[in-house]
Image (cartoon, rainbow, N blue to C red):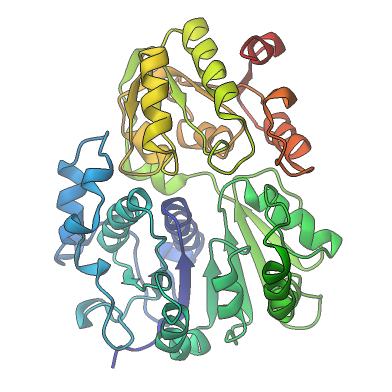
Length: 424
């Protein structure tokens, strides 16, 4: 049976997996000699090839894949071996059993996310880490089967790393955790809300979520309340109780109580990729604000058209959750080349080629790209969301949260207010 790793990480998105790699790299280089010794075995970060080990098959696919890989490259018919439900505990082969870090991927169902996660899993294996692909969705019994498969390793882990503290599945896993140390890595700008809510003692609710579901939804919330309350307590340890919580983040957060903060400066990304070749054009970065019901689709299209004309943009890097219909409409209305990245944008931009200016709406990348692209000469600009763009179903928190994302971004160019209003 594969030994349990001393550190167990749970990720549900490509960005979370990227930030686990960043955290592992920071942990390694901060240890004397550059080695991680949590399990008593010194380890050096670096590609598998440098240690004479076999690279993952996904690594070759990633290196050969186009930057604009679309859903056709991410569907089940192209799934790698890690897409199959694992047997037993489902963890890696014996050659990787001594790894101090084991990463468990709990994949969503959409093809784009799964495709990016496969490629990120290949990069993680190239760094020498174990990666398990554990299905936890797709059926009523899937979550319970996954819990049963993971229970032994969750209880044995000395440290647990999570990428989405709002995830109900992660919160369920926390009921099994015995580790004294818990690490939260970025799941984008949601980290800002997570730290704020735990600091105020509030229940954990995503900033764009609004109530709904009628009586069945309220019954589910009531039944789940003890699990949610337990997770909130676990994420807000009191000094002297022996439990530690670290936040590893690129976001502008101020931790509270017994939490500690380590800044994610994307050192691993900068050490492995680039610097990029710069093009003369401007790149736009897409957002899923329409898909989450925050921004009106017509207003969003108008805003993209206005930014394209003003900045001479030629490419649009789509968010993995953006629908094909929406992207088709954007292309027809603006003439932009739609690019579906096969990796998180921080890696795509660092690998290049990339425009000398990158324009984004309020999103994670206005905080992460300045770190990833430091010293490259790329300017990151942010266009705020006009309140008139918000839908009637947007949560009351949406306006102030999006404004805060813009106002707290470092080393970015803030576009004039008339740019945003002109799109309306």
